[in-house]
Length: 204
Ligand code: 2AM
Image 1 (cartoon, rainbow, N blue to C red):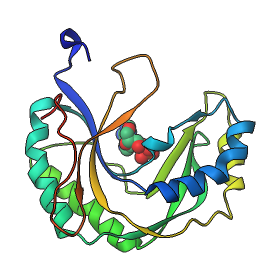
Image 2 (cartoon, helix red, strand yellow):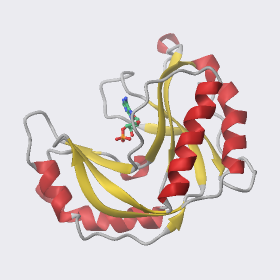
Image 3 (tube, rainbow, N blue to C red):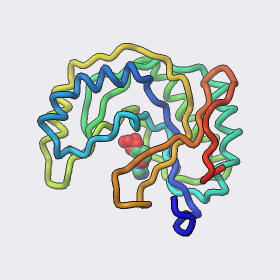
Image 4 (tube, rainbow, N blue to C red):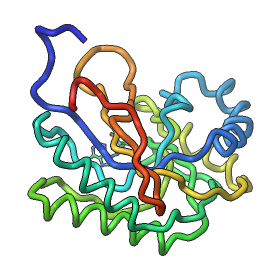
């Protein structure tokens, strides 16, 4: 990033991510839809995630204080066992895959993450937690594609996996005219207390 345009804020969210084998299974299932719906704005497979809390734009200096908080939270929560299952759409525009498995554990994790961040003094607008993995967004005026593709996913049942890590993710939305990209700021293993992940020079 150009030094002169470096922002004083960073757009962040907290998420889980399926392992590669689970993503590959779903990507194979989607292959026909990629071909028949090239005008959908497809998310990159490497960016697929399950958002637990969307914090929005935060001052860059807020991020370091979130690290120990999230590391502790991750260590204190057992990894929920999850699977990708079926599909749906929000408002005929947002195409998603559903999440199956230990949903009570997942909800508890989302609630705890949100309340820990809030009690740390970070305010953010909360949407009700509806576990899903966003796959694509339809372009304006396209009211049929998302529903059609979701219907094609109805029978999809992915294999189960433990959600290994809690991810603090940064997004480049609004920073450039190109596609949206996400990058891990840091990720912490769920349940075993060992922290991993790259230090990001923008936010460290
Ligand atoms: P999603 O969970 O449906 O994919 C980064 O923008 C991530 O945070 C996206 O995954 C996005 O939607 C999720 N998100 C949740 N609430 C949001 C909001 N108010 N604005 C933008 N993204 C939000």
